Structures are given as structure tokens and as C-alpha cells.
Picture (cartoon, rainbow, N blue to C red):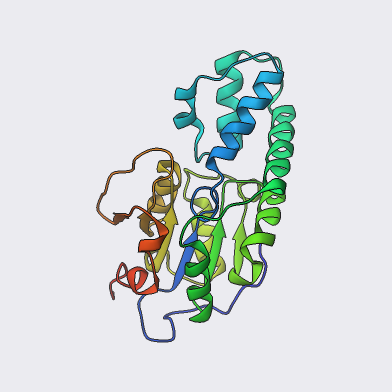
Length: 232
């Protein structure tokens, strides 16, 4: 779960109340939410089933146990959850091996956080094997900590992944800015008590107290993130 864990922090170097930035992966930093759906469609086609496009909004952003379980139940496919999990991960790895497009603004944001030594974590519902493949393109040097969906007792929409990440960075969740692209991820971050920036990828996410909605990561920089956290 952990790469390099820095010493506990109380404030960033410039005195800002922002203590850490916690970033989702699929659909937030890398343009892969569509990849997952394409793989699910292909796998179920081989099993003799056609997925209803309306189900895409049900499975997006959640843990594989939930999305895969839903699809098995919805289609009645003759496959177990462990068997389907392997097929989906295999298919996704093959897909990102061909191409792994980053979201607009992702490279610039990661470089800026690194340049200012902001404690940063990657927090994903994807499994460790997938995160490690994606990290090779994102640059593991940008992250002090990574948390995978198969490494926590309860993954998103539960708060556990973000609470684990904040604790690992020695940060107060209330002074962590989270960037997410799905309602499931937003729910997890808000339940952990973090300030949330939503960058919707597949389905709309409405603004709410403690939540800021933007159209792209290109609208997000360090000054923007610092402005989300008030002194307490």
C-alpha cells in the first residue's frame, strides 16, 4: 500500500492549512473509465451476454466486487465473482498496455504538487496490479503513498481508503483536498471529512457544501487547492 511515507505534517512549507492532496486515478488522472466499460462489454459478450448501456452509470467508480457482482446478477452470466475479476483485470491491463491517455491537466498538476513538495497520495478502487501498471506512466515519484482497492477492508464509497491515506501522510482529513471524478469516490472522500474537488467523467455531480465541481483538471492548481482549506 505504501511507497515512501513522509514524516507527519502540520502545515505545508508556506504556512498553508492544506496538509495533503489525495487523488483518484481512473477518470481523474488517466482517461480510463471508458476502458473499464469497454472491457466489461467485451468479457460479457464472450460469455454470451449484452450489457445495457444504462448500467454503465451503475458500475462506474465503484469497487470491482460491486460492479462485477451487479453485472453477474443483471445478466445471469454463469461465472463466479473471482473468475470475472481475473478476466476484467486481464482485459484492462491489456488495454492500458496499448494506450494510457492522461486527463488534460494531470501532468501539469502532478508536477506542480511535486515541485512544491505537497504530500500527495493516489487513492483508487482499482486493484494493486492495475495501480502499479498505471504508476509507471504517471510517475511513482509524484506520490508519497498509494492505496489500492484490494488493500483496505472496505473500499469506496466507504471512507476507509481516504482515512488510510490521510493517516499514512500524517494529515488531518479535514485539511486534505481530494480530487475525484465519480459520485462513489466523492461519497468516500466526504465521509472521510475531506474537502472535495469533483471533476465529473461519466455522470454529472452536483455542487454541495464542502464540494467544488469543475469541468477539468486544467482548472485545478495548487493555489486553487490551498483555497479550499481554511485555517482552524
